Image 1 (cartoon, rainbow, N blue to C red):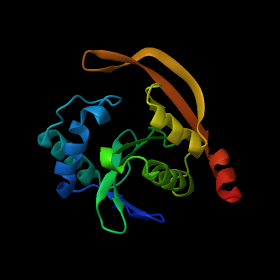
Image 2: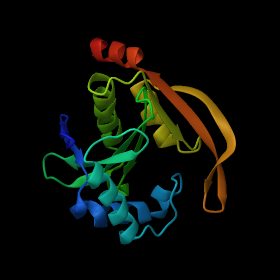
Image 3: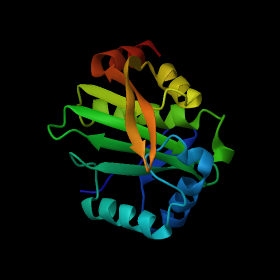
Image 4: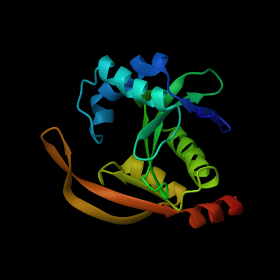
Length: 186
């Protein structure tokens, strides 16, 4: 089965394909973007191609694997970033993550795209819980999670390694019933 695109007021979220590899490598090679992520720079085109090939082979969100969605501006089709989804092995929990190009930040694209993914994982996949983690110093990411209603559930100290660098990992959670309540209130 293939992932069906999700649309919002300004964005289209679609499965990444081979044509997205150069853009993904470019975005992940930005030092400011990679600062709070699980990869080191430069992020090679070969790594991006391999990641996308694995997702293309699966075709859709699958338990235990990350599935990245390209986030396009609807008005011009330009990719502004990506949102990732990883289902737990029992499919009761979904983890989400997001990355934008530096030029696309400050326009609430992460909030809009991640909110659409929350709708998808709750309403379509039927998860009970959504999780996200971030470096506690990544203030813009913390703000996105707050706008979406995620609750800070704790911080694992010095638990997240990127190459030879160690960082804290702030954990956030959102229950499906909390998300549905937010949906009905808006």
